[in-house]
Image 1 (cartoon, each protein chain N blue to C red):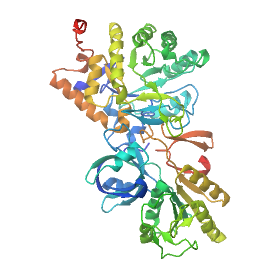
Image 2 (spheres, rainbow over the protein chains, first blue to last red):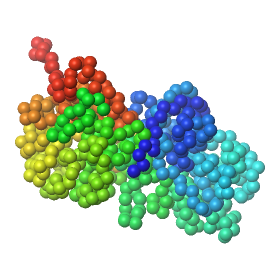
Image 3 (spheres, chains in turn brown, orange):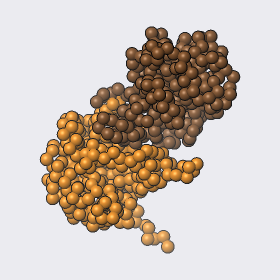
Image 4 (cartoon, helix red, strand yellow):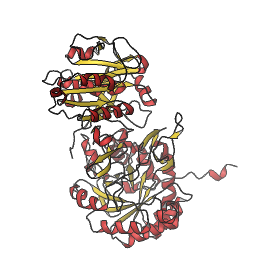
Length: 282
Length: 316
């Protein structure tokens, strides 16, 4: 087993911004986590001394040079509510980075699909491959206002009439479009998978075989992504979540049902995942 | 490791009185992923509950937070006795700590068979989880019935010369009587207590949060209960020199010292690791300092030193 690969570090909060619908972006200081994190990994956070359990949250982006990393989360329960009250300058105990992360393959057209608080791992992949020969396309979906201000994209438009993007990705030179059922300006009105279909249908046969799908989001979205990948015969990796206790593989609390060559198995999201081949979980 | 932490439990020489509890630390290697964590910092590790055949365990959710604690219902997910003996045990680094296998069965005979299998290995001791349902005889947990507890311990005793530790359930009327029956059947040590059964409900769906509907409550919420149970069991076990692993909600050295004073010879750490994976350093240091401050050479001098108040009857 990989001994001593996960750090326990006290991280100071450098920034903590609130967006609409109780969404927050938290910037924390840690050289080791910023330098070691791979896309799709997460950290396990002590949100307050009053709660007995930590909370697992995906890493959205890192600044290895300055030793910082960003998390995006939404208040959904008591843990995230107490986290939202923590102030700049406070110190949080962090365990990380944890998990297998996404495995980047030789398919040069990664299609990254993130829904809601499933957006961060997609942004993490985009950050890693932004200056490489990969040519990713990112689709982000949200049914509440996005935790950023969508802006008009100047990058080539693979999806006519869908004009807006995430500024961070635009700055990285990564093509991105947004989807929502809410009818926001410049945002595709529909599901992320419908927008993905528009993108895929516009690709040549030669390009289509270069696509690998990476996804993270609510369960129904991932199920739709699984069906899409099957329909287009595309390899697909998905990041899952589950209630978690230890986050190091010790308690088997966070398992999901997985199909293996030996039959059904219960795999731990924390260390066997959180990323799984879509065909093994749907 | 501080010298004054060395102790002996059921014939095993331990570096520290800390025992890592079954179900919390996998098969002994998982927590070593944490930088700064070492198995050498604890006296013994109870490995994950093992059954004769592999088990997939329960459907999620398996864990949920509750006030000052958590509920779990893992369902004994494990690869089965053969794989544990052949594939996992050879990789344990026995120079670091002592390893105790934790066994579970759905019949008295299954307990006997697993014990026999582990008797042929170099495992240091066998902990019996008697909180499993007796599938053959109506599904009541063995540990909730002193006579069934006796039968389980008795068959294990007949199948091994290794040290046996029986993990007692708090979900019964008289834990001290149950302890007596386990001692009669030949247990060498007692683990006090296993989790308390509990439930948590999602008010939106009106369903239990735990996939198994109910599960075992652990963490600081159960500490006062565990402490009283240790005290009660110690009143019996002390007459037979049967030592206790005191466990239930310990997160600090002071908690650990409370359990030792109540009668525990060693102390179990489980849920506390989930909050602080490096908590054992703090507990070792705190116990060692307490012994020094109180001019005690070892933990043995502290076990069961509880001085009860004697004026209870004067309040009329």
